[in-house]
Length: 320
Image (cartoon, rainbow, N blue to C red; front, top):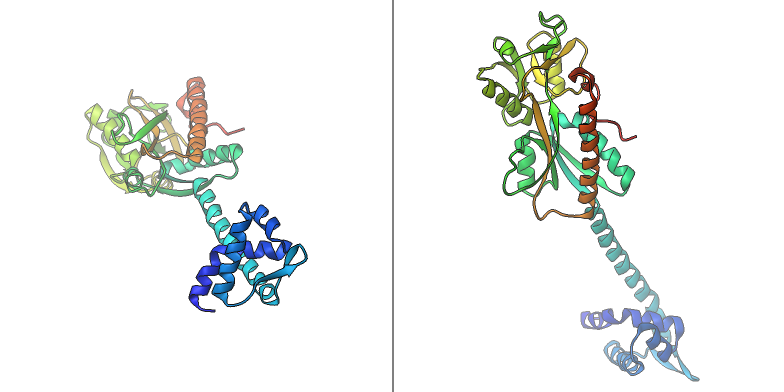
């Protein structure tokens, strides 16, 4: 069969298959929602294009010729293959619409992101996440480059004008010192107490580093930075080894360390969800709803906490 015959046949595969099922022109036309004369004319054009008869009279109806019966199974397989292809595309579209690409500051992977995913799955198990963690600047760049749908970052007050920003909660910051530090038995330290300490913090570009820099700048104190890390586990290890002190969120107190309250009115960081104005989908709305719920419970827990060290163990409540 030449290519012209194939092209002529392709649009009419459903007609051929339906005729093969019912062998009745009028009934086939009704099933396909086509006028009966249109079906008859289409059959004649196909016969002329293929150079063979497809139907022949049989009483008050028609029957397929031997040549048509040979062709019908191939037409059915072609239709099935196209339907499978369309279903595959639709399934991919559904998966894409139910996928949220989440960028988040590294430290938020310790507690906020796992609890968020669990809360979202309780609401809609079909939603899946593609996770990217890194510096605050990296997360915002991913948003701008449309490589992320949503970013969880700090220091978004005031928010950038080109982003939609939802302030979630303010997280207190504490001082982490080695267990054998001379001030380890105290309950708090001031920024001025930290002036002569070897400070372990994150590298430039990380949200926590920006928060720490702002705290020192507001107090008029120049920090003595001796080590810069890229994740909390490294910072914890360096402090536990007695190599300095750090200002960290009150996630947990690692072994070999002591957490002290930082006596400063600016000892906190704001945590926000950011997205581009045009980014809106049902899955993203579900994630934002879960974030609001977690944030509300976090604010409630912090207001009820007796001391920062109590909140340090569990900064966000579990979803149960």
